[in-house]
Image (cartoon, rainbow, N blue to C red; front, side, top):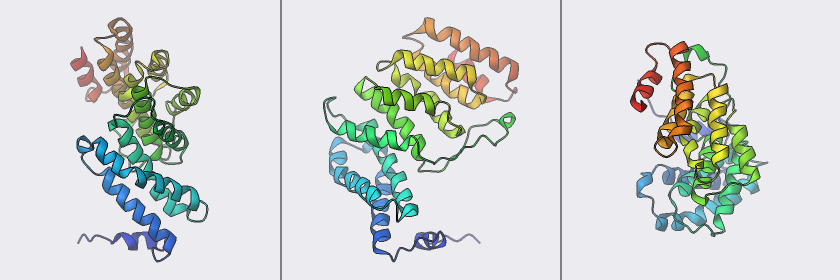
Length: 258
């Protein structure tokens, strides 16, 4: 018989006492952020974002204040904070000059080196499929956040470039899988970097599932940059013809784009 274990009991099993006042407050912030993250993203307006700004700010302060003595609980809170920030940057309509963009940039750059998700390259690459991953996953959300930030501000700086280049070679299969379809977000902000990342994926990526996601970016770019896209599509198609099993979903994606 399936039974649901109460959340406080789950934390107790991890050695996290919710009777501790600090853990109680961190848990409270985590629950509110979790509720924010579980909303229908299309319903998140600027007004809702403004209303939740104090929550994001106080959560970041709590993480910084308690990270050393309450690492497990602050990890929980941090994960939801990064996810919430990624949602905000994707939806908000602030002016480019708004100073708050810098705050979100700092969150994403810090989270881009987070330990979660863990590396997943121990899996057999021959048994390639679309990956599963737990949420929150700060490094994945930071990757998407940095791409969204570049798209919204139409620029990147050296630190963001370095972070994205490193993330493109991350050992987490789910991270690269999520990055692949979002590369076109760099089209206006950093086109040279965008093509560099795409070419790097085509050249070095071992998993066809990730290359299939890169195809989504190429499809997005096709009408605007057909001469640049077509030879890259051909390289992925040649790779698929040689090594992808007949049942691989990448064949369907290639046929649709063609």
